[in-house]
Image 1 (cartoon, helix red, strand yellow):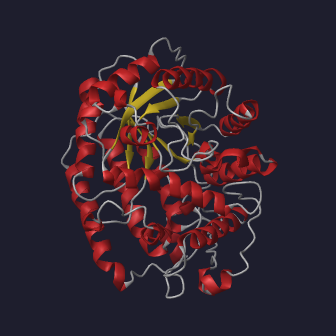
Image 2 (cartoon, one colour):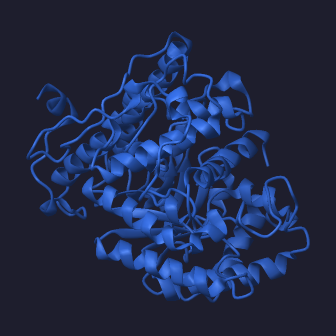
Length: 467
């Protein structure tokens, strides 16, 4: 496990989960039904943070929150660097011949149902939280969701197993009622929520490799039998798994390939497609060890940092997809606001993590989605899922008063703002942009799953502002 990956895995799952737990004032993570303003929110945020709705009747983005997108001097250099990285990769993609027209499902992470939230998923408010979020993303035309359901939450010996299974059956029913596709991530064990487990604590120390494989395979079969996902990710972040379990059996590409084969042996997949892959930061040799497995249906990839050669790895993955005739599933991706000289701790530092919250990044977040959508058209990407779906509804303005607010406090206020905006059918500029992007790609490729018959004629975010 590389020190850089240790940092990435921590933020990708842990920081967002801790923030989720902080968001909910009752019942759990991302309680979107009734987030009251915190008692000290006025001292944290200027009044200008409040969403200013731009009313454009008859347009899909009828209410778009207004933010200050001017780039603070402190971040102008970083902004320019990340912007250039995205521009360069966009040009690289322009030089590639695209695959034949193919459907792409544009999705997002269903964060209110993340299994790492743990027991709070069993509260009465948890499913309401899921329903509210689903309603909001359905209004944006989002066509699918990624749901984290990690070992051992659906193993029969796990506390409240029956209740967790019932919760996820209800979640899946709500998703299917909206005509959305489902990708389930079950590629690593729980990071929080497991009794006695926290990051850095070897709470799996007494779990033998053979027991883990047996129980994980059984849980994966339960997911297929009871939840019937369209896609099921059983192995992507190779070093996250190694960080948690410390098994020498999975510490090499050859061992990783054997591990995936042992999970798949005897598995009844039904109509579910199995995804296996790597994080864009992982050695690609781990992908070579699994891509030729005939039981693997799709190549999975997670995308977070973009500096260095991380986006170049996506090109290699795209070419492997063509070589082995297997589609790509990107079921986690976000633009981390970091540059190479910050070192391995760029995401474990809360001050750095707080950067994602600020509205001045909106144009860059839009460009990242655009570049990744272009990648999905150039290569055979079947499913693409931005992780931070909360930002489709709210950001924080950057100011002298918000710059130094502790990360988790700022994240809680951002979550409250997202909850209010969801309740009032207000979206962020990024949410409106993602809706526009989905519409454009659907118009180019009619075979892509479309919910747009339910939506009015679209006008872009800029048109809405002009109106």
